[in-house]
Length: 373
Image (cartoon, rainbow, N blue to C red; front, side, top):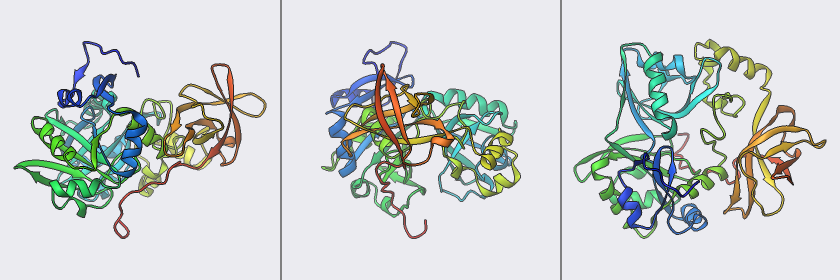
């Protein structure tokens, strides 16, 4: 990430708040965003042990509503939206007609509509695709006035409960409306670090007050983009634009859990012919986790080679794992090489590294589930 800041970048509602706390701002997804405050390693480990506050207001928050909205969304995505339970977020994928991934997103039925959170870099394109491809009676509203915070880590519930009583009653992948200082919030128990945590939709005009209230707690600190990336890599979670794009399908990416049983039987979603064929016959390539020998991280774009030196894939995310104290990576390889334990070589700047395929996540998930929820 470059440290130069371009004039045409948008500012987050918390821009001054980040700068006042020493946030080093960099361009990301069309915004100036904090990459770190105290240092990526320290912020990463703090989040794994306490609670880290992430500003994710660059994400797109949408309300999609209208007649038969659930059936309409099913034409674009492989989720079972007609069976979606109120206030239970679902991970899904916006697909093109060839089964390629336009974006990955979270969709929650809220009454007679859906609240959808899409990636920041793709939000305007997503909105255009949805408005063009959904029927005229289905409306896509972009909630420009909302900011979005994510509080992540094993102490997240302890911290947030002191400010917003009742949030600790939520289970993983459950949301609900709350109020704070007379303001309406939408909070879901979800996130992108592999840890327990919450995502909080709040009016941009009061987000600084809420961020102050959260970070006043001794176990909560602001955390930048750098640690967000290393945390999600350890959790084995793909990042759109790196591990996912229109050249990858949900089957290649190992995201088949997002294709519900009814949808597999009935099809009827964008790219269904190719995706159902890959489910039956296997894809040409698969996303895998890789453990890398030595101490030097291998970055996105490095080549993956087989034992004979043939190129068999590419690294899509890579870095040094602060929790494991060694380099890890994910990438796509020819399917016959995707078995755990397969030895491969990685080539970066004419240097070779030994690696092997390992299961993901690299660090176990720590989500808060109640009973079978």
